[in-house]
Length: 237
Image 1 (cartoon, helix red, strand yellow):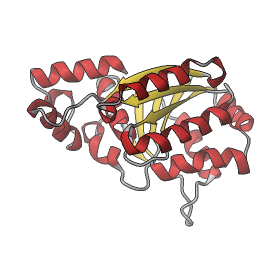
Image 2: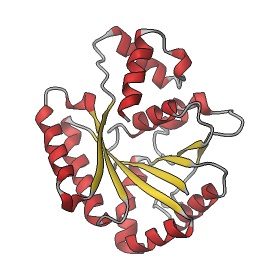
Image 3: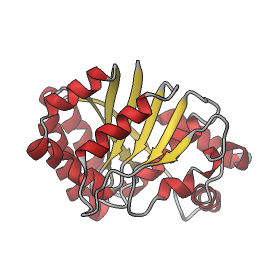
Image 4: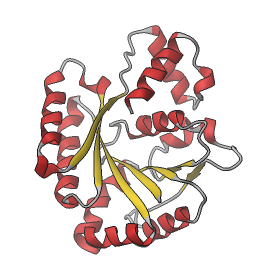
């Protein structure tokens, strides 16, 4: 059974592409995993996943989900999922941009039902997993509003995981506890809570790490202390 992991969050800059990068780094040597940049806006994954591009067999692609009006096209979504399912890979990591993430819930409110989307999953003999990214600071309120929307829409039909962008919660550990408590409530049907991205830009090693991430470097580019830090981050996801 193939697995599709949707990295989603309607608030831009929350850390979806950072999560996708860490997932790709963790799976760098696993040629059974495939990564897709669905982000029509900043295309961070196109830049940050350079270390996967040009591989044989292919490990990375960009795809569009928006029509000429910049609206999420359900037919494009289903066609792309079907096209991916025909590829000989076990797991697909899908980086949804803010526009695509923002319109995903309305797709099931207006055009389709979440039950029918589950039928698509079953027809493809696949497992769909939604990874909702949460950032702190001024992004916290819109991020958690989006999380609540996804949880209410999902009603336990799909696995929903919560990924907390740890560095954005500096000085507000109580908000992380709040998120963990929300996720623990049975009625919210959140499967897993994970923290990631604990990088401190005030330290030289972490600045170097973030620079290499922005340049799309693979694991071989990280040396000594940097590599130890990256392995610690990968163990968390």
